[in-house]
Image (cartoon, rainbow, N blue to C red; front, side, top):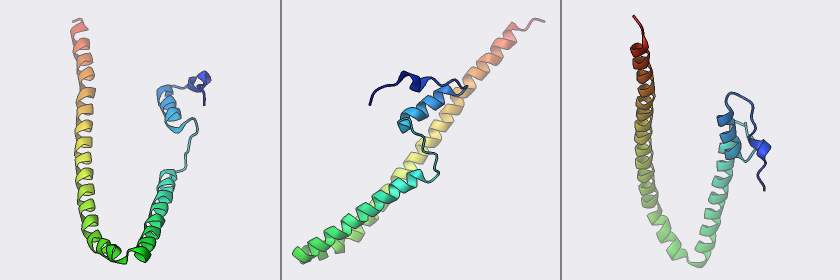
Length: 123
C-alpha cells in the first residue's frame, strides 16, 4: 500500500476535515450509520461462541474446576461492571473538562480581536 499524493488534493473549503476522514478510513468512506455496531456485533458473537465452546470443552475434561469457575463468575462480572461504570464516569468528566477548556480557548482570540478593534477605533 503506497502513498498517493492525489489522495490529499481536496479542493473544498473543508479540506482538512476531508483529509482526516480519508486517513482514518483508509480512503474508503463507510457512510452506513450502523457500520461500527455491525463490526462490534460480529466480535461479540465470536467471543460469546468461543466462551461457550471453551466451557463445553472444560466441563467435559475438568468438570469440578468448571463448576468452581461458574460459581465465581458472577463476582467477576459484578466487579467488571463496577470498573466499567467508573471508567465511563471518569471519561465523561474529562470530556466535560475538555469541552470547558475548548470554550475558554475559543473565547481568548475573540476577546483579543474585540480589544484590538477597540484600540484601532478612531474617534
